[in-house]
Image (cartoon, rainbow, N blue to C red; front, side, top):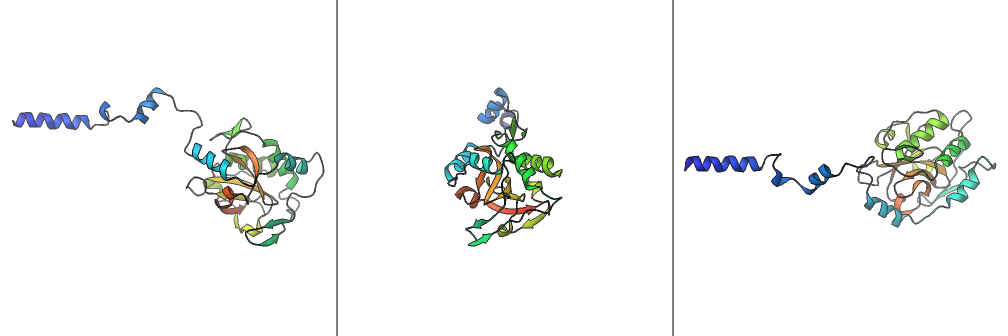
Length: 223
């Protein structure tokens, strides 16, 4: 009897092992049969995309913004006379001093990325994510090298109050439950440029329901 009990115990222990096929989940089976897609990641979620599409209720006419701020046609500074409906005050965003952020140069880089599809982990015009986009814009317009992730970029520069936002400031959002999980660049008039999961590189309103309630903080990298 003791031998039989011992044998049963051994058999049960073997069945609970990590190598036992009896407890392999469907996820594990799928992973062994289907190679993991390149550039997939925890932030690239259909739920997040649907939420963004549904709650983005302040759609921006990107073509109009492009025409207004393209260097091909001289225009006033991007950052002029924006109204902060949340603070209930008028916010004027002054142009950065010469030798610092050149509004037009940075805007031209931003416009050059418009329409680039969102790809988690991507860092080129064939596909890019939010932090790679902000990094590319800073690198190409003011020769500033930003850290790769939004979580590291939020540690750069100095904090900026919402009512003091200025062209070029980094804006951070909590879109996934992790803070921060998204980053964009303020361009004035309550608009910001970013690589959106739902729309790719685009320009959005910070007064949109989706972004307004997910905004967390801003940082100024270049004074």
